[in-house]
Image 1 (cartoon, rainbow, N blue to C red):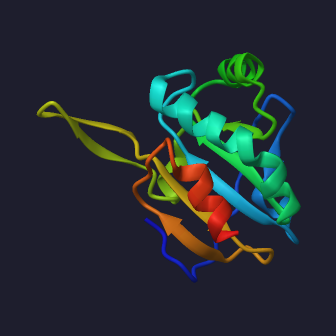
Image 2 (image 1 turned 180 degrees about the horizontal axis):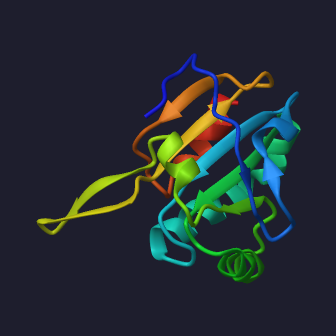
Length: 149
């Protein structure tokens, strides 16, 4: 995982709204969160938590970008189903997930596999990481982020 104080790696990823890059948000804080899968229980709780406080996040000069390996079509359906107002970026190649340390070995019920590690970075207006959340509770995370901002 990357650490507080490091420059956040720039990226370009597709979203339902079109391609976005981290650098296009220079001058704003960015909440960059990585989640395993659209429309699954924990990921839905986390996304809806961000949705519910999104206006407050915007008022603090920040934007939210969720990243998973799901397709743009999947993101579009997820956004529509739950009224998600922020960006959901598709990283099917795992390149951004890997650059941020959000792709790695996981262990569930004794089985080891590779997957997305639920984690969040808060990036300042100049592209520097100001906070890292390596383990996230989907239910409380949006309020944690709001308190930080």
